[in-house]
Image (tube, rainbow, N blue to C red):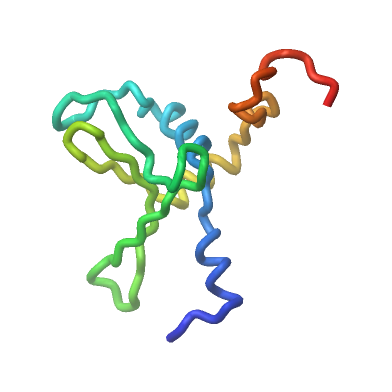
Length: 121
């Protein structure tokens, strides 16, 4: 079976989550950036995404022992010291983000030097 142009964009965006929203999810669930790695105790983590504020990359892994081909979709981040990889189900993260939108104040561009100051815009 091949992808049709109509089905491919939906699959790619089905559980799309911004890296900042994924970071909010991690902090809300107790897995903040300063959390120690269970393997090496490092506390420097990187979210798998193309750039600092881009979409979180979704990992697709085939699941065995099912009658039909099934892929588990997950978001990941890794320890910069030892490479330990943690994954979280994309559907769970996406649902949390949908139910916990960012406050309007968090939508201000980080590069805006006037962040926190009153604006006429």
